[in-house]
Image 1 (cartoon, helix red, strand yellow):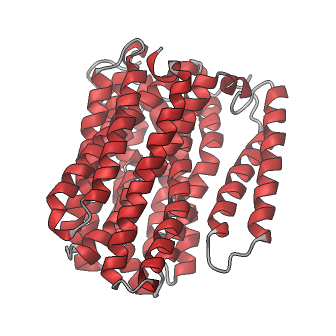
Image 2 (cartoon, helix red, strand yellow):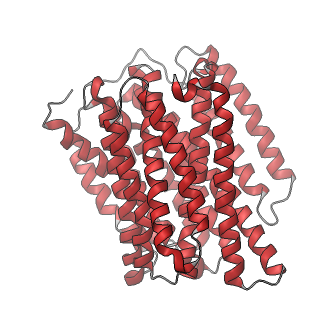
Image 3 (tube, rainbow, N blue to C red):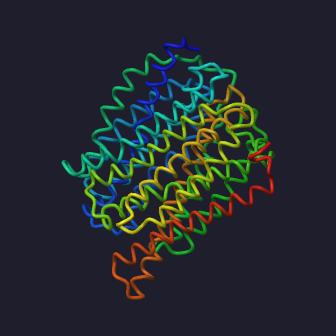
Length: 460
């Protein structure tokens, strides 16, 4: 436990260390530049997201458990080292294929760093201040998220897309140098690491998400996605059975026997599936329809992150008792409202309304994410704090990958249908943009209505 003066500085170090992950929003504003540089179709750009996010999603719980056993600082530092190497390799990638490989390396670094960052943040403070620590951590995360498109846009205009990777390497180096000031923990030799469970966990997450991605890719076929889905489902069953018998499981299956807890985790996945539509599609709207420069587009996109900062701060201040569940509910409602409003403000003349909608959705995302993470952290024992933080991030990133695959397919098919009906390219884009955002808002609203069959999810 740190003193009152030491804890904020320790949290700042954690925030700088993890900043490389939310600063990846700079890559989203670079999507148009990357597609142009490598001669790609819009649909293909999703692999930039999938290779990175799929890697760290499949490994995060494993590394969170390693943090619980070996010490959070040690795993956090290893992640920073891997990230530095990955940023340099991505910036130097000679082809799109190599860029995807180096993005997977970046995903390993992100998994190591993210898995232990929330645990480090909460352990710097008294347990009664856990929600405050998570709110501050999420706020720092959102600051970096906001800076990503702002810095990314300016860097792209001046030096090209590779700059969105170069600028993060020195940030990670500084964090690594400062990380030795964070408290170290003694490895627990009495607790065994589950190597088999780790392999099964990484495999079933990767297989199922890769199957989802391949299923909607042109030329992806049917048999390979189906085979991957079946293999992943079988691995999931074996993983659950193995975890129930292992004395030190990565994730205790008994947690999900609580239906309210399971529903809340599913809602986190759904909220983040909807929320990622901004980073996936809005950059193309800002550059192609609104005709903004990369710098101006990054500034507009950053408004969503400003909203996340406000929502995170609000959730940290309003914690206590059952209030976090109500905070999470309010967050979902704001995400629905903001998402629908983004679709309604797609016309270039309504850029001000879209900016307000981005702020609304961002507040909802920040409010929900902190409240949800605090609830999950409270459910798991203190010694599994690494797994708790990782679980919250896994549902978040599962939603991101699902969004990158499902919403890309929905947008692309709707746009092509508009062109086939005789619409101009811009008109077809606008129609597909509106439909995609309205459909995602309707999906989340339907999911929320269904959860009220279990009112205790939000109100108990």
